Length: 549
Image 1 (cartoon, helix red, strand yellow):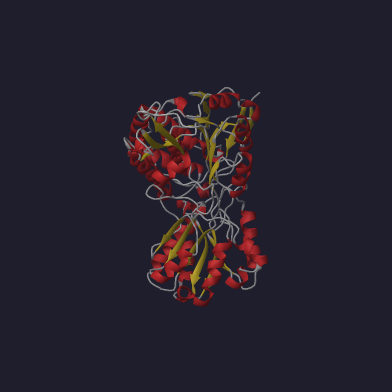
Image 2: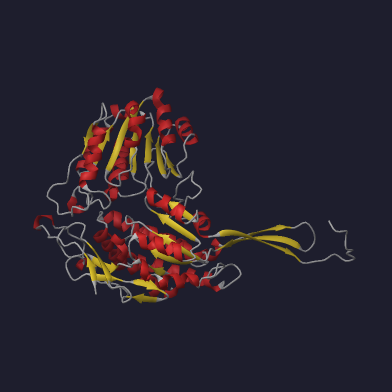
């Protein structure tokens, strides 16, 4: 029996979102992004042991159109159940601990993957391919064309950065001389073998591709579990990889709910799981895997604007981008703003309000929130406004005239000001530092004498992903940087909390499980371990057996 879960919604004619047309589709593509939500939905199957599997499960999950309730689903996917994992378990069991390749085995694969990566990067640079993925992303996770295209651009740059010989350069080791003739030591970067990757919805292409390719580069075989809401994007990218030479058996692709992946981790000999997503799930995985996990989880990301006022318009614009671009659904989004009173007097709040109010649903500079309902977001706003001295800077209302399904959120870009002294009270701090994965921020102000409270607030926060110190005052920069910990911190007048991780490390600090992304160091740290091989070959002439010790 075919079991289908779905939500159908009706398109409101006054809220049609216009997408740029795609003149031609890539030859390997099996979807037309223009037709998603208006025609019979494409089905996303599992991939296991080198075969796309459309028949092993009778359960189908339908993904609703995030912009138009009652329209057709944008796609369906195999809703794998816990009793349907045997093929995935066996696939992982066949992967040796020494990996598919390593510095001493199947070394030709380093060159092969370098070539695949080069060709994939070149494919993404083609205008029709870039537009194909941009529109596919927009259909799954509505964001502006510029934000969606930026994700494709970063991914292409990453692929080209790590193409050709740069794959084998990732496995570069080192040697040390020994204690006597014939002895030396060599340090190798060694794969884990069978690994898993669990990726979030908010960057359907960039995050999965960067982590997936890193896993492959270092010699592992990954099983990829994408977020259900955007699984079609990575399905299409895997088809691109197969077109440019990746063996289908190199990656398994599992669809379904989180409980299914949890069961696979119990049954399969997966030696490392890389997870990007919520801190709650990260903690669950840490316990379930007994610590065999690398996490890039939630970020309640702060920005501190220093006392040296300059370029106020630019600072306001960057605040707007950091908080509200991609509908605030970035792990690096600005969650809280500590603004020196000098900037408040310079009119920064009015500029932030003006920019926020210019965002509109028609161009997807604001849109659906996929992990919070409208009621949840506005309820949090109301709770903050009960704190003495708090007030709404902008937003705090539901979007008007939209057709976003009730299971999602639909709110105006929102900022709530909370006095610093009130925020620091024990009864208020957790509320003020609750991460809302939405176009939402808390703003507070401080002066020179209350800067220690700002540093204390940063110390009390539980997650330390990104941060920004907006100041060109060197002494101020040094004071803040030397007393904080966030893993990716921007500093200077142009400092931001969001950025493109193909050119620098991106990841949390202060957590032994912390996973990086985007750089040579990140790939080596996450996807390989250290192995030392000590060579000792020459027995000295005239050796005499010593007394036993």
